[in-house]
Amino acid sequence: MPVTVLIVDDSKLARIVAAKALKELQPEWVRVEASSAAEAHEMVAAQAIDVALIDFNMTEKDGLDFAHELRALRPDMPIAIITANIQDEIIARAREIGAAFVAKPVTTEGLQGFVSGAALRLKSRQS
Amino acid sequence: MSPAAVMLTELESDALTEIVNIGVGRAASSLRKMIGDQVSLSVPAIEVVSQRRAARLISEREIPPLVAIRQDFSGPFSGRALLIFPEENSLELVRAVTGDELSVQEVLDIEHEALAETGNIILNSCLATMANMLQRSLTMTIPEVVRGDGASLFEVWDDNDVDGLVLFLYIDFAVRKRDIRGYIAMLMDLPALEALRVLLEEFIARVVGDHG
Image 1 (cartoon, each protein chain N blue to C red):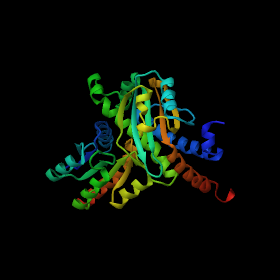
Image 2 (cartoon, chains in turn red, green):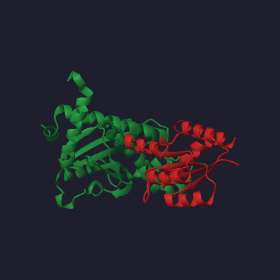
Image 3 (cartoon, chains in turn blue, red):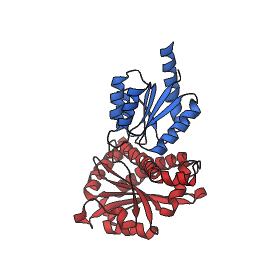
Image 4 (tube, each protein chain N blue to C red):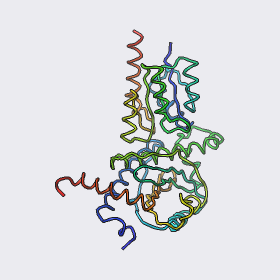
């Protein structure tokens, strides 16, 4: 089964950029996109999602709140919060819910640590 | 003596310039990553002016129509941050951040939200860095794209106090290879400036430490 990554961002540009970086790092991973927390919830309920990249600054529900809910549903899922809002407090809140922090703009270098860690975790779970 | 000098001591003003420099430097590095070309920055200018004068400063610097991405921040000090550039640069900026991979129609379709996202990244990196340096947290609103002349970009918070004084801070940026230029502006009202002054004093005490 290929790994499926959910990219949640209300900006299409941001989803394009994150998907591009992800594709370079893990070309065989399947990428699916949601433009809001509500849409992301539906996708998580409907299909198997292994990894989530979640934007912080979204209208309606912010990414940390969504990540918190997702964490309750999926305690083992590798989750990263993506944001240009690099305030210490935001990083600390991401850590609290066991999510990694990736600064925007997303680059392959910036995403690499999280993606390698996620790949290892998924592999060790399968074996 | 400029009004800014009346509001802030020389050391406070230096500290603010330094913090803004680092914040904007971080913002420029984000923009550089997004477009892959060098971004040059001016030294920040900090002035205390009337809101009307701030709007006029904007109009004098660029010929409308202008595009701005606007984000309000609140916390121990509140205000508004803007990324402003001439409208004619807008599509070039969108092409730059999308890596020249999209068709003309796709660029047009994505323009509005690509501007919002670019502004979000640039203004957030700047404001978040400043908040971290001052050891306080700020809440940022979702970015909004606005078009118009200097006055309309600035229609400031409180309509009853159109000529209240504001701290007006701006930095020019340019991407020479792309013919993209614009600037980052920040506006804070006087109560915010007073709150900021306290944080600047704390910052100075931390930086200077026992040697002060």
